[in-house]
Image (tube, rainbow, N blue to C red):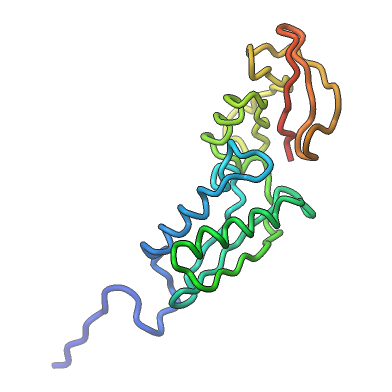
Length: 181
């Protein structure tokens, strides 16, 4: 009688990954904690631009970063900050690749990121992704100061291309609105 056994976990030739290693999880948390250079109230994880991180060898890591829009000037600063943080953690070779597909969407901003935007005085973008069940129709932009929906668009662009400038008619305060993409 021949006895065979099934190995637990991947064999050296098994292409099926088991998921991130503890080191990859730690490095992803460090890279994700990097503040956004244009909106330092948000981290790259909050913003949803950190798409992947893979340890490719001892002291070598590859990071996938998706900019909020093609040509975003902040992507260079994001890449440099990620490289610095990961090198400080002992990674000698850090490669940050810009990944354009799938494209970033404001739906990628986490709930925590939306909360931080509102706390900071920036109206978070409305969710535009797939919705199960009845589709809520809410075209109003809420003032992050008083919650009123009586707001007026002052300029389609604000301090960055991804924000618009609005004013609340109830409390009369101007505020940025992170535009939906």
